[in-house]
Image (cartoon, rainbow, N blue to C red; front, side, top):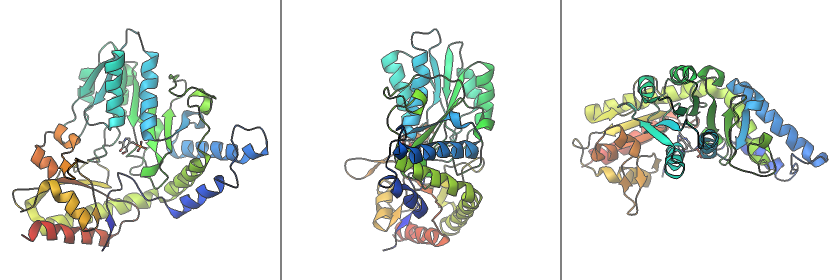
Amino acid sequence: MNQVYLDNASTTRVSNEVKEAILPYFSDFFGNPSSVHEFGKKPKVLLEETRELIADFLKCEPSEIFFTACGTESNNTAIKGFAFNFLNSEKNHIITSNIEHPSVLETVLFLRDKFNFDVTIVKADREGRILPEQIEKAITEKTFLISVMHANNELGTINDISAISELAKSRGIFLHSDTVQSIGKMKFYLKNLGLDAASLSAHKIYGPKGIGILYLKQNRDIEKLLHGGGQERGLRSGTENIPLIAGLKKTIELLKEKIDDDIAHYTFLNNYLKSQLSEHFADGISYNSPEKNVLQNIVNIKIDYRKFKYEPEMLIVMLDLRGIAVSGGSACHSGALKPSKVLMELGLTEKEALSSIRVSFGRYNTKEDIDYFIQVLKNILLSN
Ligand code: PLP
């Protein structure tokens, strides 16, 4: 059976070059970068070279880059780190949106419930856009932090972070953004976004799982979450994961080389998928992803369940049984799907959300993958 992976916004396959770059750091160069002796030297050089490479790619200073274990940790560190500096302060208000990744939303709710921070959750519009004017309305004298994602993981919708940054700066508020989905899928420089902090993760860009990046602008002195030996300039204790940092270095080197081709490839697949969908299903298919200001690698499709004979809650499973991996809501105990929370937040009904699927392309997908997906979808939707 054909196996087609169209769930690259969830995670990506590690490229062979990255795998090869990781291995020597388990055995040949296993030293601790904090060691004074010879064994520590190569890992230490790798650590600092990787920091410089990332800073150069994202256009920021190497001293603004910190290694973490994942995007989730970066989000937690940034948000809790700012908040813990404002414990028992007059300023106790945080703004975020209703369609953030759980590693942002749950963190902010934790701060509200356990530490009495005041939280405003701004509603995204129907396309998943978090509008600067909505953020502006939510700002009070007490706001110290805004956290808004750069691009949404289910829809691909890109937010105008620079406009939100202007607002934040003019009111003396810190701005954090989850850029886990946008890195490598669109071109941007951190210095142009005007952020105080940003979160990134290697496994969405053909790197290994378990390594993330926190960007923290110079002189933003946040509270640490991990206390210990003082690695990462005291912000993130714990012996650095040198093998995965070697993998991250190769990941960024490849991304630097391939980003233009990657984006062109996602755009080609996006246009091809949409043309095929309209040819074979006409107006039976529409899109939850917006037309403009959207990542090209993500297409959130809504199937008109009234036009076809199928069970929406079983669609992803039926695709999976035919070798196609896409995503939708989250699995419940019976193996059927619960509707996506993000789509429900946008105002879709439960049935509409269940009839929606996220297709996300990667570097290794081909036109033939789309052809197979269309063939399988026709088989499921049109065969009854
Ligand atoms: N933020 C967004 C928008 C994501 O899509 C993800 C991963 O799905 C994360 C954060 C979490 O990243 P990680 O899996 O590295 O913890």
